[in-house]
Length: 261
Image (cartoon, rainbow, N blue to C red):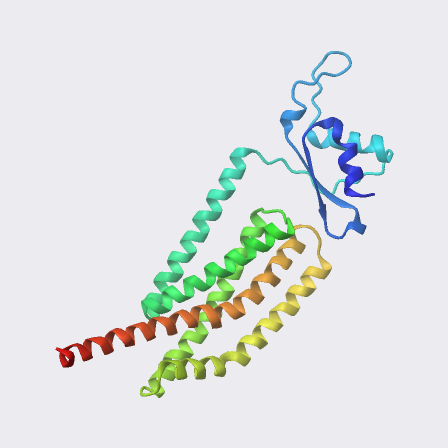
């Protein structure tokens, strides 16, 4: 059974979207259909049909592939109101998360550290969303939960490195900031790798032995965990280094200004 066979069998229903879920050999498909496609239908006796899209799709598929040859793993109805509500909730949750992290990092460290941390977790969130779109994974509340989980995991790793940077700078106040940054990241690198690998092992087990939305949740977590490791080191810490270099150049210009005059 190929996706072309499924699409051709559903042609009488009108506009129907068919996507493959998992490996082609599993013969699992996600079928989407507007309920307006079957509105107004009547039964043979002239009464209202009352058939729902799922029932209509199943009966059409069984006509082609035989009765009992179709199994439904899940059937959902998503209206425009629910879609808008889900989008609004995702935006509000992500916005509040970023604001709270920005406030927390600004109080505990400095504004440049807070901005670097927010940039890193924005990157992680976008990577998970991009993977969901690329893999054609269903975007639902489970996906939002995966994104928020990754944001929390990423900021935890970032705070650990930032804390080590602050301690190292106190111990070596005369060193260049890039040397302080390099020493702090090197000292925490083994901790970051070991923690991430341990978490990935647990998520891999979850991915192998679960199905449905939990499998998608684990897959999104795997992508986010990998993204969170390098974003903490190269984006968050890199932004702080860029900020410090610009601040140093501005301070040097102010010192040279009277001499030049």
